[in-house]
Image 1 (tube, helix red, strand yellow):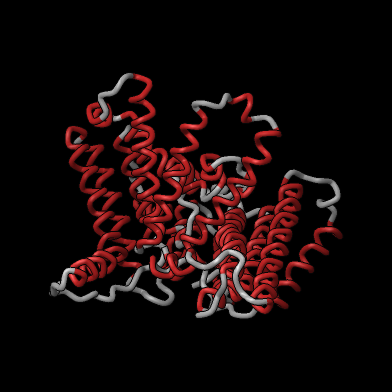
Image 2 (cartoon, rainbow, N blue to C red):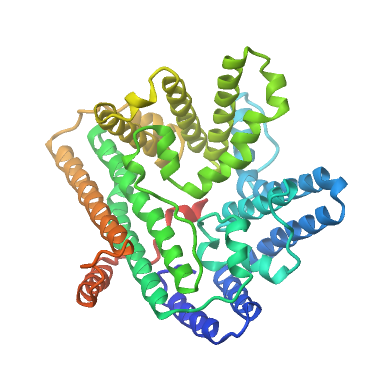
Length: 480
């Protein structure tokens, strides 16, 4: 089920009514868990079974850690292996089988196995990371294991952020679910406004740009200018698409009396690759930082593997940890080699920037004379990364990179200009809308006036109605 379906709006209205009528947090969580099961299993009911497996696995592991603390390492391994096995089978098994076929086929050998055609359950990359963070935090002693399966299952399955995040931490979301939430009219109105802005980003900006981006990628005679214009347009499209989903999730959560994490903070204004990942998909970035990067940097194993002088060893461990982290990030984003290459691209950029920061003083990097060109360069490098990310396979990537950047006749240049202008208009709308949202939430006196809000609401609703072309066009991150 999508946030843009009429069925979802009816489900949301029913949940809001029942939440308001519920007298205890357990009654509210029962409603939320039931609604989440309906939402997640709307098209494929068997998805709920996978969600239940991950939920019961990590709830049981955390309880066992509390009962048998001496067995914590072994129990943590059960959680990690169980969740990664779930991901491995449903997301990566066909990828590895296909890669094995290609490798053996190149050697003239019969691989003896066919791709299984396993369907990718939507949201599996998100809820497995969310449940694993719970058991890791319990293992570290940073979180007490919960006794209530209902509360914990609601945390895992919460429908606003179940399919595409934000990836919430138990220490942030569980306390909110363990008390009764007031459904306040002001919060419902504020959340609905955020939901509407997310819909504008998705329907008005992302979906309409995406039609032209997809067209370029399916053309046999695309030229270099068209491909790079489409890469720029996709850079805008994916922010509007995924940022729109995140805002919709936060808006729905706010309507339900819950505060979900901010996932994007103007990422294209970042002045370095490191800063970009502090602004882009923030909940995934912090997850990877806390559970992959920092353990790799500070673990005893890392020190033994890099027995270098103190200064070099620290940077060496950081570089290796960053490389591993970003490669895992690439693989997390998709079971294809272009995603792995995308992760490698970001690993190289971030390690290079880490080395540069050791040479250029911080006071210099904070000056406008440094930050402005650095921001421009970071954006260009981001567009290149989006080209890699958008490609379906390495052959397509190589074909597009081999095109002359200034090639094509006047008709191709006109087409490239149209796509470029769409990207420009979409970027302007995102910037203006984001600025209005931030000022509104900061309590700007003009934007708080009822007549101004009514006009903005009317514009948003009319825009969504006018520009809706295909409500069946899925969110980009549903594929991950």
